Length: 238
Image (cartoon, rainbow, N blue to C red; front, side):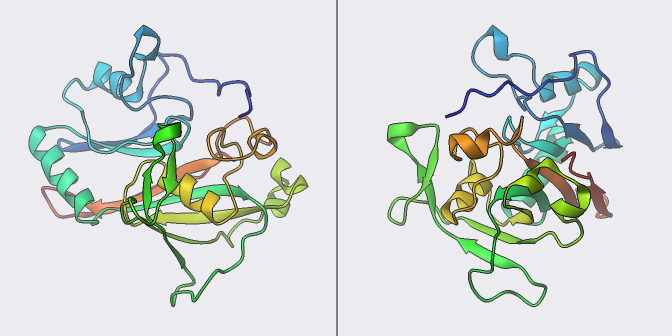
């Protein structure tokens, strides 16, 4: 895979971009290239959860984003809120949407839903010879589903994006399950890996961007204690 330069991270003492803060939860913006939780080794202790906990020591992880992915992350501020939010994730009551730029011009692969979404329904398993990579595996794979459609609100050409110089598509993604690397593996399986993906794309496609062009752009759910509908949006920085 390509050895492109790492994404430049904000300094450790940089202000966190909070989208929401109340007594039960917070929603924060994760920059690309930053771990969600500490990794192994002293050089992997800087992470989003540690930065949040420096200001809000009670904050607890509810879900994660890949290190290379940017965007909205939800954290709980009590064990009870963490339990309720984790249950909501498990029961698919938390709506997540992503924006990605993929290689090539994507086209419909089957019947679309009434609102124009296509479904990728391909089981995913650990690729043991190449772990931690994942792969489509119809025998050992766990059920994995992703909805996608072209992002008609903004074309690459209209935005003047550098990605417009090569055949690319800007797509919206909604994971219905939460497998590791699910969006990246599903898009690769369709023949449209995400631009900037050093794990699943070719060297040429990976080298077309300084980072993975995948961003968690929307979260919608009911507040775990009050039931109030909440929605948060974060425009993709690419």
